[in-house]
Figure (cartoon, rainbow, N blue to C red):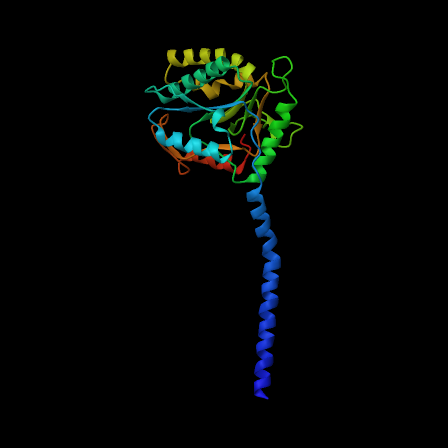
Length: 278
């Protein structure tokens, strides 16, 4: 009798374990498969003719990091161009002169759409849904636009940035693209080639003021001077953001810039979270 009872208990335990295992598989397998399928989804490609990244000659570490980021999003090597950054003791000036040089480079090459990157830029490609939705909207905006100043519907698209619009950015017909009148940080932005001709003299004038009145002239820093153009022209920002600044030693700041620092750290966290900052 005891043998039969033991057998019954063993069978019951096996059934309980089997039912529990089936429940766990049913509960978690779809999520696992969903995550697997999402990771296998191809990344949408940014609609640009070229990529120009700014990089100091002695920062080979950043050169390797930014090229790895570009490879991760599937950017063709033939589209990638390195621009030797202008080095100055005052890093802010070197940065500004480098962005001025980029505009000249774009105009000389005659590209229609160019992604400009600072070499500490990182992309949000690991969140494929976020990336693909954002790039899809950028592609729609660009595809429905002409390339000249007369028929274009956009001028600049920030992939990330520090939004400072007093009332926040304005909604558009695109879910992930917003009009901005005041955004700083130029680590990743797409420029319409023809519009680079308007940006160049603006940066040149700002840089002249920067050199005449250093160092307490923050309004002439290259990204702080841009809002004058944003007030009247067609500047967009992708939200959630598609690019942020990686943590590393900053030649501009002359120290390591990471998430533990109060200003840049909070900005980096906000970019990664896709927050809108007023």
